[in-house]
Length: 222
Image (tube, rainbow, N blue to C red):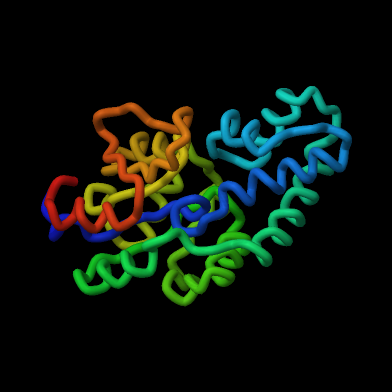
């Protein structure tokens, strides 16, 4: 597909625009540790592949055989994530250069995240990206639908004024990639090198770094 056929790029946030996935795993480790359950970051990376936070916590509870209410775990997790983000959160390498490239080619962009809008905007603010995406952050809580369901991706395209066929979706997680495919949108996986996260589907374009997306667009190979 030629670059002039892509009118809007829809980005996931965590692990795509901001380098947060490992911090989110660390938050889960810390919270479970408070309740006497030993979990490693590797446990998180291997077993939890994106999706709705409540579902991730339920899966983690089952995996670790822990009997603590989600109503207790979720606020503790969000508080822990906020602390870690303030100290350590950074933008993904190459994101600002990619945005400059999209601006120069008059390609619109937005964020579609399973997280609450205020949490997403906070992450973008901490990494210096909020002004870039101001007014273009769409949350599953607004669409009332979470990836891997396609509704959030379609909702984001609609709110940006484009058809799904005009858009490209970029996500790092298998469930996020599944959402893009379910929406019938051209989908790119920003692969983090963890084998269990690899989506082996011929419809998916795989990149290892955001600068490769620019190369894909310029090479008309999307």
